[in-house]
Image 1: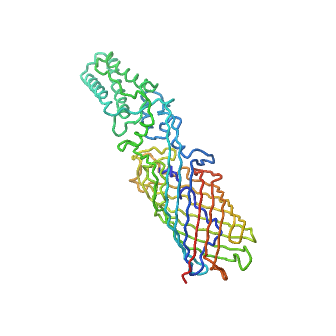
Image 2: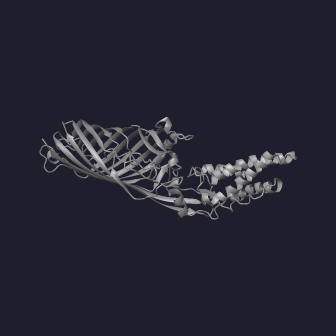
Length: 513
């Protein structure tokens, strides 16, 4: 969810920074020439790096004993049960949850570039993005000790009896029924105080619409037995020692542990405490559009009959927030863009002699802050409810990338290319948008946890560049094309998808003047 994007975060920048132009065709366009670009990519992953170690992409949705480790709302229930039973280390265990996930992001981009002068080119691109995350959950109840709360209505008879008993005890104390026996009066007063505290914890745990836990220990579990024993001890004191009969019911605890269907119902109930959507259908929408300009600083490439030479170009672009952010209530949603304004600077240098050469690339990406609504939670605790929904302001960490892409020309216009690129991203800074948006006791900064990351990417591919009639004496339609395969070799820091990507580019030039 957004976190995962993040969420995964994700999956900021649609999982990984885009490659910095690994193909040998020129960065700019000749003066008076318009260049039409069609680019497509498909990126898939089912694993990720976290602190340099590979793990399942759905690790945050897996748990050896599902409880507050993944569902923070259960922490309150665990604290109440710990106070009632005296077991300070109690944790709800709904069973071992195993989740496998697979995500894919397809991008089709249309771009136009116009050469204004020999050195200056302006360009724009608009992508269409299709993203999808699919998963399968499996709940193993072998070690579970908890099930689904039978419901508030089931608990009301118990509280009606308890309230009547405490009311009777309070009236008897006020009437002086125990005054003749000071030890009995002290017992009555301590019992009333203890029972009032117990009643508050039980009601908050079982039946309070604002705090009732969706999961409870089963009646036969150690915690369930201890809870009922605590109630039974109170009932025995009231009846045998204080003369207050009629309180005989016990809380209605689940008789069986939960199953996958019940877990999904807890997660997705529209009026429930979590209210997530488990829709796995793809999202298709425009991505974040780009506009910018390229400046060709030096162009001594393929002069006359000599192959190779030197070519250096710089470019700058503004990435606009035209995409769709991941939806906070949709589990593992990737969205179609960062939906923030970015400023990107690139420097590209081509060096070569004869059939051999290399493209050197460098990039700096300044990601500007943006305000949006999301559920505030740690990346490792994605199963939170709308009570965590509020406006936050995020200043994403900036990205720096360097790459080297050596090539070997099979012919003057066709070459084989490989490459290594390394990028590093700073940590996100997240705060509440305004003081009134703040959630009590929850630091918005947890949304930026594990956002600092780096990765090394390997690529291989083929490039084709035929300047055709754009060169003096040249013939034919000017065309650039490339195909490449890329994958993440290693990553460090926070969460980085262990992705595979296939990318293709086709560009054609038309003279205007």
